[in-house]
Image (cartoon, rainbow over all chains, first blue to last red; front, side):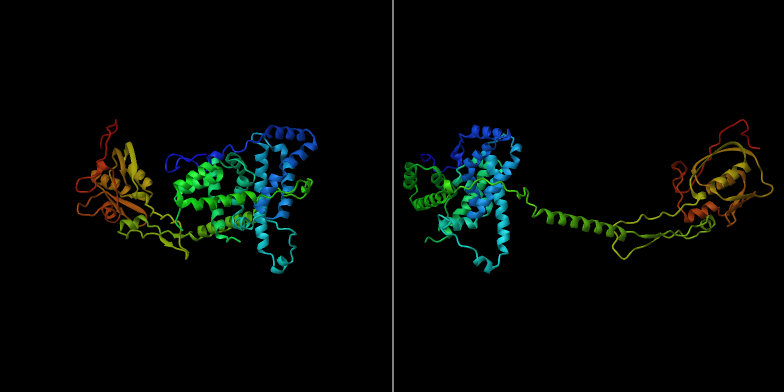
Length: 201
Length: 272
């Protein structure tokens, strides 16, 4: 990439070059696996689970910010997918449909968890078992993520962790590309603002 | 801290996403003031990308379908439905209360007899509307005073009939009794009145056939076969108290009523 000759880049969308960032080569394979599962092959779903577990876990973990809750959420998400796979119309990719379920379910769970933890007694909170190893790779990133809303976290996770393109993010969030771009820009700005507030260790 | 211009901000974001080393160097050379901001942003994005949780493959749990997964979040559904129901109930109660408060009791004025009007009875009072304590939303329609039959415009067309029969017909339409005095001539006449009341018809016939109608005060009129040129006719008395609107053709320039009976020549139409 080189800088544009003009002084400004007004006409250049900020993240336009990322539109075709990921083109899943496993698109046809996913559909084949879905068809096989619908035909009665249970092992096909196991393959889909193995293929997408980590990405779905990343979404849940990024939105929920809790390892155990994310692990439970992943099981719930795949259960929902298993139940509703017959309703997948194959007009979109299986992956974006799966990510949409994951994002919606994780955001729903995050809101529920926030409501639940508001009512936790202090003594009860102190009694919680501390994780054996540090749960978060980067405390500063985590501190900034905690301050974001679940929706903003979902956008950042889809873009930076799962490395989805804007088209895929738009499909996963059931909105158009421009809306996804705007929402991502705002989420990123909010993250930067919170990140800069956190002092370096 | 100085605010970064929007175009520079966008450029920094773009470089942090996909900037090549050459592009980064170009930016630093062109905007040395924002070089540090670019470095901080690069570091932030790098740390954000690195913090992606990567569970170890051997630690990946087997898929265990959950039996108690609720597909929809009903946490807010119940309160929302209850709130909506409560809002509808309050709205319905308010509407019913306002409706009942707006009802009024209307007392119609006492009816006025023809005699009272002919004798100069004061015009009927406006109906008394008794309002309820609550502010009224709707206004009850005001009852108009009832116009007696003998003051209502009539259409009377008779060809070749006796005067006495015509008078009886006029009395019948005006709904009052009539008594014809002795010695009254009874010619065969034809009349055609439109848009004039019974009193005006009697008055006009009296001028033509030399009789005078007298209101007896009990809802009846006596026809005396004589005429006093100075006497005030019942129609004139009525006109003092009641507004009479004859047809435009029967109104003169000074506002008085002038009725021209339309006589149709018939075989027996001659006056006897």
